[in-house]
Image 1 (cartoon, helix red, strand yellow):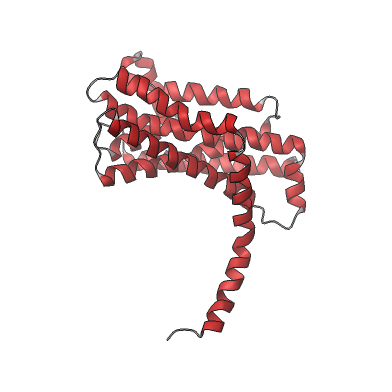
Image 2: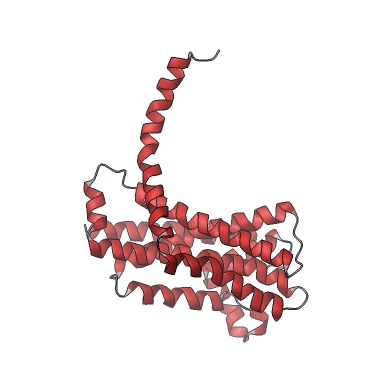
Length: 258
């Protein structure tokens, strides 16, 4: 038995009212992000350009498929780390974070909006990489493989967003970009995202399980049926653990500094 039209509208109205602050925060976050070309263009274009250089021009055989998976993870790193780490530090320095706390806005709305922004960027970059790999690199993926690779890329926004949140809650606006780069670039190299770890000294392979991005890369390789190391449930567990620990420590820090 269906509800009368008036009753169904009455049910939908409170739901829409509750979601309105979250939607408004997401729109504001997307508007602010897209008005910053210095952030948008590198995040969208650098992973594709690097893939075309290393995965297509210099790559041979299976290298194109391997680097497609790992560059999808690399493409998801930038928006998550910089979007959370640098932007949060800037919001703290400018007083915007304090202002939002004083407004009648759900406490999680700004963080969820930032997370959705990172997810959107990760999905867009992965889609661009898949298109480039197919058109230029002649890498053929099935629809389930494409969906799986995009899904894993989006998943990376959670642990790396938590790491960025932790950085942004501890350092100031001036130091945040340098601190994020200390994580961003070494993690990409040490996790085998730029070149396969087999091309690097053995110590890189032994240390690789320490980095969350390596676990994400193994999941990405698994989704396109490329050889991957370790257990898939373990990789997922590590990413979840990094997300939870990073978010908890960052939340504790933000509460302490008011």
